[in-house]
Length: 194
Image (cartoon, rainbow, N blue to C red; front, side, top):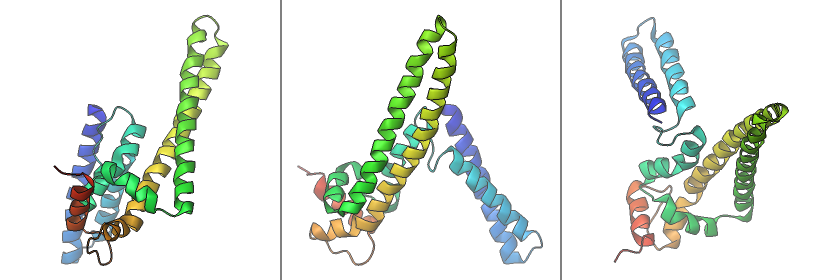
């Protein structure tokens, strides 16, 4: 985890430095402005390969599944853990079906990964099991990453599209998109304060 976090922080720092340099170059009309913008974009992509937010879990998949909590909090001050059941009830059936499909794909990938690990155990006595185990494990990991990314993107999209509706359903004033102030109020209301 710490190695991934260091890599993320390094890429984030390089991205921010390159972004400032590109902005200054653009404002100053420098000839190398486009090259500096490309450098900033490359660092941005590198940082996001590690994670959309700084890593906290040993594996990429765990970070990706929990990323919506942190990004939604940062953008809207909405506690996704508290708001999720309410958002789920407001979501249209088609949205729930998409989320259900993504969640099923994630569970299936986790089972496949577990089977891959289990197939590696007999490899101590029978070497072909190592091939089967490694192939199954690799397939599970790849599918898990894809499913985790899909589920996380859908979870964030649900908040983006239904967050304001949740606030209005709770009787709060919310014109247009959900704001951090309104998100904080939704969190307070749903958190059932004493």
